[in-house]
Image 1 (cartoon, helix red, strand yellow):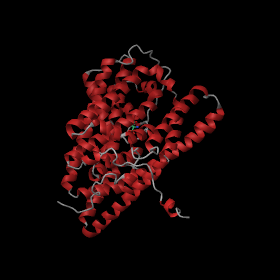
Image 2 (tube, rainbow, N blue to C red):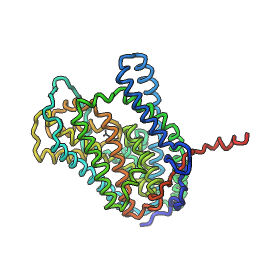
Image 3 (cartoon, rainbow, N blue to C red):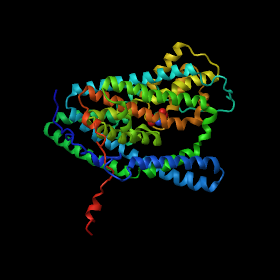
Length: 462
Ligand code: ASP
């Protein structure tokens, strides 16, 4: 059934997406926003680590800087990103569904994306278990179970995960930012819009205009990103400190190794074989999204940037990306699954508990379900880890041992999570002939540094 003819995105003209850009261009001398953010990130990391090392007892610094300025500006910036997510996903998804215009195609895209998300998470957890079993982190680790304590928040029962996809009150779903419920409702609504003839078509056009405006709101928020990222990094590292990693170096490095293997290895192979895309270009173009995922540790808060990168830099049509990116941010967490796999082997080794093949299979299944059932927000992976541990009979308080290094791992695994979302998006788009190779290969697509604020023009001749 063909449901409508909502406008597709404009045809590709090199640099036509430039006003959304966050990347440098060889045509401009100005520092790009991405470079500024990278510098801010590095300076924040260094200042934070210095405060952690030398000023932990200086109450003035702790009160007014770390818990004052850093906390306030950093959190306000994360809020400003989160603020974009619900309206952006709503308008963008309406455009996406209207752009597809065919329920059968929509179903096909949905099934492909869902299957790929499950498969990539399965690959991630299997890789993590294999590497962790081989390296055996935690063997001979001084077991300090008396000194650690971790009381997990209760994980939602799995049946609820599925029941709760359908919102009993959509307004509530929007108010709470419940992604799966919002996706469910918006898709139904958009299909209904397309079935409503002219009125629906007019609404679809309005949604398209609103989507464009929202994209500009994203651009405005990005202007503050260097400041926001600086304060986020400074706060995280003044609280965490690099030194925390040392006693946990075994566990930490196995998780990082697996994240890198999956992030650069598995995804690259998938891109080459399933999407016929050059993974190097992909990785380079994903940089802005990686930075945001790393500094916010939240796939959800990164959705606006992932969407922009995937559409404007990688050339995926909105009709695919609008659907697969928010879905992936919610149900696809390869990095989180990797942490859970390594953590399981690590804690089993620390407590000298033997796990059999059926336990490992349970871990694979539970990690996939955990990844579907949780939102992409900071630290959620640990809560779901408690569920995995309960299932295979590992002591949940063992999570206390890995708590100290989790924030830093959370940042890296979130970057892997969103890379998975973008990879699957490209594969689905390629199979649907919704990927523009010209944009993908154009290093300047979505490029140029200046964000033009209209009031500048208005006052130009004053
Ligand atoms: N922070 C991760 C994300 O947003 C989830 C987690 O592993 O805790 O994707």
